[in-house]
Length: 473
Image (tube, rainbow, N blue to C red; front, side, top):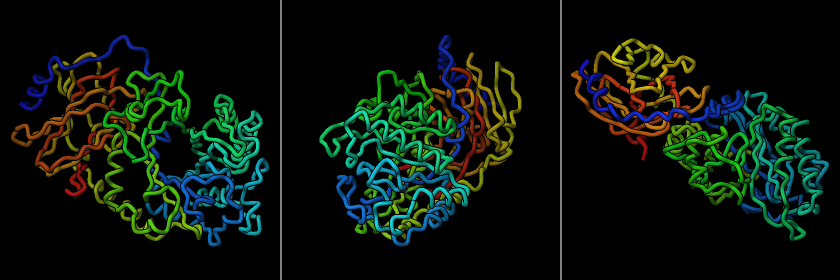
């Protein structure tokens, strides 16, 4: 009992529950599914693949797009082998080129020589995703550097009609990705985007699709393209007065969210496996290693966000072998690191108002079972092994069904002689919080919530011993 008494004493006076606050926003069922998707792929593909540009000008000849060996099944097979849960494709980037034969543009695959104008990338990819059990997502940029109506009210009609084509012909679409970029079109004008109408269109056509932009409405940009979420990462955001693009909140706010945000809009961390977003042959030897990808996983998924990892198809229309090897290595590294939860089914305890009881939910491996950390006073919950084990990684999981509540937590690590070996403090937990550190030999991990907005529910406390070189840098 020594370690429990010690924990309670050092924590006295540190609790800071925020009573009287309005009920916190909660995720929708589709947002909860999105949280659980963890990591999925981005595929930047289009004329830029063949011009070596990152942002096309919209005047590229359609015939330049010619992926003679396009194999979306290969994309999906590799995604599946890599443990990714889906693929989001750049159906229309800023250059305006459509990877489907849209009726509302003359700058599409229909006008190219690829498959004699009868090709349809979205059709092939959506079918392949269904075959391999992957989520299918679509990126569509409102900015269009080719369309003659861009910069006029007519273009909002064009964009709405394009989205209708997407949902009607290629659904279901798990995530729709809106880029907030807004530059000049071919007529030198900028567009006043009708975001309200765009949102209403998606909600009507596909209520279960989550929509990404700088300000949601369902998923937000994390504020950088490095794939890194804030160490403090709230799934909440204040969006009144903000719009996607230049009207978005500051990047540091997007990175950490708002503690008392009015909307549930969690962060998605986008990053490319290469220096660029589109394929460039000179970057074939600049692909991130499996170890680098693992670091990004810890700093995105391990901070309660999701990881959107860009894998640009090459000019053949396939994922390059170097990218594929890195992805498979990344999968292997995750499997090795998190294969053995050293606390699985270990003894548990919960100290509440001086009463000690068992709480098997903390170590049963089930996210649906939880321990409630009441907001009225200090509580400690712990998992205890019979013997010391070497660990250097702890994973905490918060049940988000009733909102995100934990604002400050503390972990105390004891050995079997009740000696305090290590103390770790943190802020938010969220769906998953991965904490890594130099290895220690301990038998008990004890969690105390020092500050919470409401009642925090903890689903799991896990511990692992991972390769020392994979400890967060």
